[in-house]
Image (cartoon, rainbow, N blue to C red; front, top):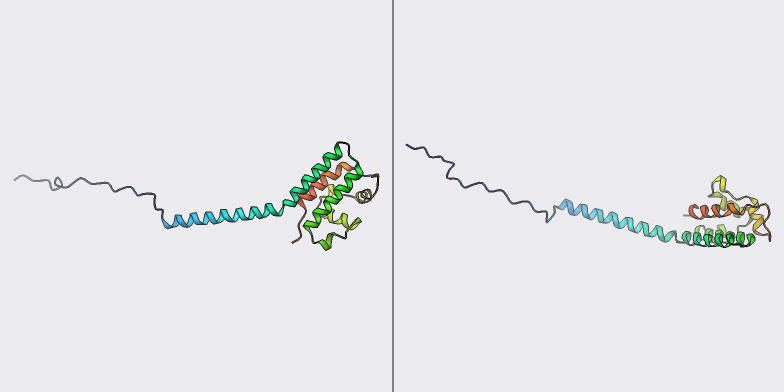
Length: 158
């Protein structure tokens, strides 16, 4: 008797089809949704921040223009008065009107110096020079960096 190989009559094994990437599993849909929500939240927060700081960008542009005008032979008294008015307008946008509008002299200087580092704080000579025709005892070159720092970093009232 011839022994017959029982495996010889079997068909060859077929490999299963590759698993497709589409449609993704439900976990991937949830992950995509979460990523889209996070991106949308970040965009909304950044747009609000950008709009909220528009007055700072405008004030920095005006400060730069005033400084360039002063450097090209401008009047120091006019420069001081203009920078003081610019700082006041920025403060009126950042703080309640009742807290800022009526401030002048040492009280006004206190608002500005509150957010300035010790090395850049403006002294009483700034106050005196703003209201005089010829500023005396004032280093005008310190005014631009101090004003720029204050405009960029002052704390906004809630």
